[in-house]
Image 1 (cartoon, rainbow, N blue to C red):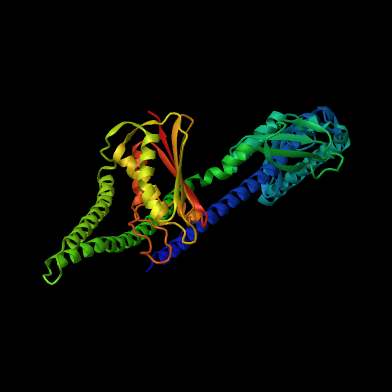
Image 2: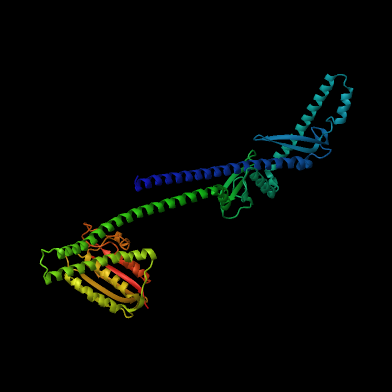
Amino acid sequence: MTISTIAIIMSVCFVGLLYLQVSYINTLISMRKDYLYEGARRTLNQVAHKLELDEVRRYLTEDNRNYIRKGAFVNGNPMVVRSYTTSTTNGGVISTITVNTTVPANVVDEELFVKSLSKAHTVEEAQRLQYDMLKMRAKYQRDVLDEVLFYMLDNAPTMPLQNRINDFKQLECYIKTELANNGIDMPFGVRVLDHDGRDTVYNSMASVGYGMVLRQPLFENDSPSRAAVLELAFSESGLNKFIYGSVKFMLPSLVFIFILLITFVFTLYMAVRHKRITKMKNDFINNMTHELKTPISAVSLAAQMLQDESIDKSPEMLDRLLNVITSETKRLGFQVDKVLQMSMFDNRNTAALNMRELDANDLVSNIVNTFAVKVGQSGGTITTQLEADDPYICADEMHFTNVVFNLMDNAVKYRRADAPITLHVRTWNSNGKFMLSVKDNGIGMKKEHLKKIFEKFYRVHTGNVHNVKGFGLGLAYVKQIVQAHRGTIRAESEAGVGTTFTIVLPLK
């Protein structure tokens, strides 16, 4: 199974898992919103019912005392104080009210009832007397309630809404209690409006900061002119805490999913990087084999010629063979040194640098003069522009020389076939730093290669792998040396135009 297949499968799994988690959270949030709405709606209905009961209780316990006084008459009957109980039903909720009120005096009291029962001769007669007593008591109780209701209907239309509700603090207490009974505990605001909603009778809402407002008619069984509106509002912070507080236990799972996703991406990146490095190392081994095989073959051929007795061993021939052996041995040693230098950085992360004060202008000038011969053999030219007023730096002369040499050698390797090579080396000072640039008119490279050219074994392919000699270690070595000198290096290039390398080093 390839890395791409694994990546696709794992990506689909992560997307599916994340989708399920997000869907579950959205469902939970929606359920909490519905629960809050239904609980608040039940609260308003229950509070509205309580306010109606309070109004009836006040009429029965207080207001009717002013209307049906002791000694007054109902239907021509004198009144006495009696205690009665009545029940009302609203939405399945039974409310019982016990009232001490006045009733007609001819209602048979308990003492008279006992005397009547004592005179009964049979059980049937006692039951009939008890039944008559209950009928009479129910009739007069209904008469009293009718009188009180007529009084309410006659006087309530002119009564202010503040008097009908009586105590707004008690109203808020009702709301708080009913919200708690419905499992809702959060800050709220209350507002009471008249029947058309234009005049505010009571308001405990802040000017801003409420995210949900519910309305409930008050006294909705009365005429429209007597009705009112109750508004209940919840603060934005309270809503967020109530709704989203229930999903905070899901956050760790999301965190774990993202950690797994990051780990997977990192693992995938490392696998791809390892695969790319493996490919580059294979290319390096192929190039190294080719680069080492050439000088070894030349030395081996020269040695065979020296051993062959059939070949004339003239002084000229011996000199040529010795020159071949010497030059190819140096070349072989140079290639091996490159590998050893990079191995040194891998093992110790730094090189043993012999740092001393150097005049960078003089050093660059000497390197250019030495390299000019190689550029001339290729039919090119090299120019210098040494403008650094303060050229003194602390550097390792050998490694710094190798850095400049490698940059110029790359320009020769990657020159264009249709134009002679032109090299321009410049030094200058900027922001208290020493600047060095090597610019060529070679084949250049695309932008996607610029970030990778300083990696070990990386080479920009130009068709045939072996058309340009090297291991892909030169620029990696250059970057390591520059960083060891506490400097930076950057590359600018355009395909078909050329490349410019710029080195920035601190002054002495």
